[in-house]
Amino acid sequence: MEKEKNFKLKPLTYVFLTLWALIVLFPFYWMVLTSVKGYGAYNSEYIPKLYTLSPTLQNYADAFTAVPLARYFVNTVFFTVATTLIMLAVTILAAYAFARLDFRGKNLVFVLFLSLMMIPNELVIITNYVTVTNLDLRNTFTGLILPSVTSVFYIYLLKENFEQVPDQLYYAAKVDGTSDLKYLFKVMIPICKPTIVTITILKAIECWNSYVWPRLVTDDENYFLVSNGIQSIRENGFGRENIPAMMAAVVVISLPLILLFLVFRHMIMAGVSRGGTKG
Image (cartoon, rainbow, N blue to C red):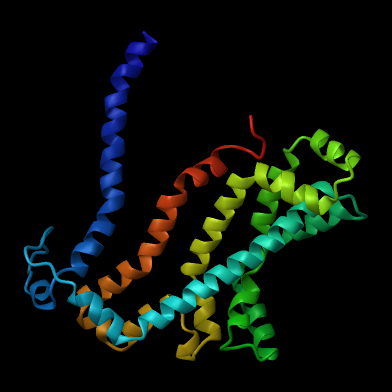
């Protein structure tokens, strides 16, 4: 009886998931479609069409010539890679210290550390802005990167995964004379690799989509990120007048994140669905 019920519900589940996927993917389809429509063809559509018979790549050329989008792209890649790598080093070492090392006041320090998550992000931004300004780090990559090199949530998440690794492995390694740092790189990191990859992807997406902080600390085009580039296009009037070119710029900016997810989707799912131990 239960099998018959599941057999009847399965088609409904697939239909629902298919409809939901179409709803989620439609904005991306509309973005790509608009980006290949000509400026005149787009403006002549009183009723928007779901297709185009004369696609063009001119909008992509216009997007790169309206503002130095290529430079913004390179700046964003550097900012994302540097911030993510430094954050990984800080997160892994901090999580390992809280999970495996014994030192006086560890629990109190960790509770105080977690309490930072209760501070509104707006207050943190204000404090960071004052600090960066006082250090004369505005319009520098150092000023862009430093406030983003740590995350309380990622440290907490990785600490919980490290703690799921059996203690027997740690004791056996210490008996063999393995140092804590060597144990971290040879045992802990390989076992918790799915979670570390997930954290890396999430941080990379966060950096790539960063808007408020780069907007505050940079007013020099040499340090603009792609988020600043989109705003620059709009402020120049280009985006308001030429929506297809604006969509072309958005497609170019979104493509790296989509590829990143497609390449690492299995590791992301593994990191979310299971803990730090392997069966």
